[in-house]
Length: 132
Image (tube, rainbow, N blue to C red; front, side, top):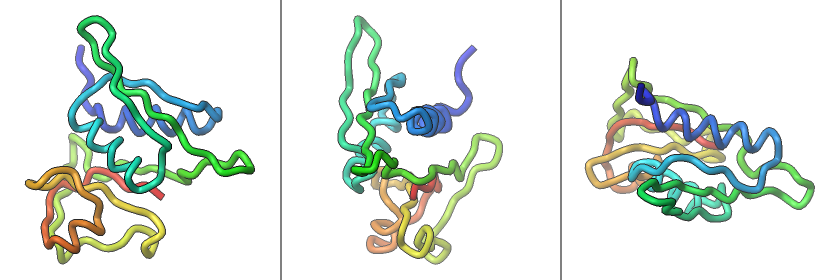
């Protein structure tokens, strides 16, 4: 049986890896997960990520980022839009996450963007998750 919510699986894998202080986390590849990982890298939440091909399977390896004291850069991740209850937002409904300290990920017609980018470009879409 297939997975019903691959993005929630991705976020849970990252959350679990952070709790046990892993340096990297591996998950099955998809274009959406790659775009979200790229956004996390651009925003400074993870060190880096790479796509690894193993035979005919692709995986994403995300290198997690920690402060000097061993504390994770990512304080929390929350899935907003779920398969059972999709959440769509327009520019008027978008607000900064934690007063601008966090960030939101939105799937738009122009690709995966942060809440800040969506507000600047005046574009809405499906609200994927929040990270802070």
